Length: 131
Image (cartoon, rainbow, N blue to C red; front, side, top):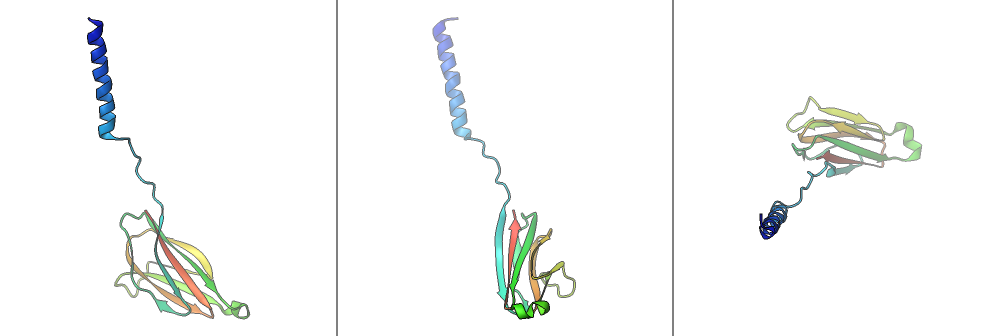
């Protein structure tokens, strides 16, 4: 075979390979899941929150909470929280308590929180979804 034909054929192959990479673009791995803040709730006393929605793409969600209280009332400070699915008033999904912490839920959909608090200066709950 003529050397010029081989060189031209090799050049065409290289052009096709470069063009193929250019047209298809680099392979980008799928995004890794991460925590997204959904909602923050604050208060001093008992409270029923507005609804919040955990996307169906979330594999789990968590509530993190903190409280502040006067030192002289520390033995009487109390914080309880119940997680209810939208429309439900009796059967709660889960609950958590203590003056601070983190609790995980492995369901998606719309929820609201019912907080029972006593002898606190303030409380704060952040809802995070993992997707």
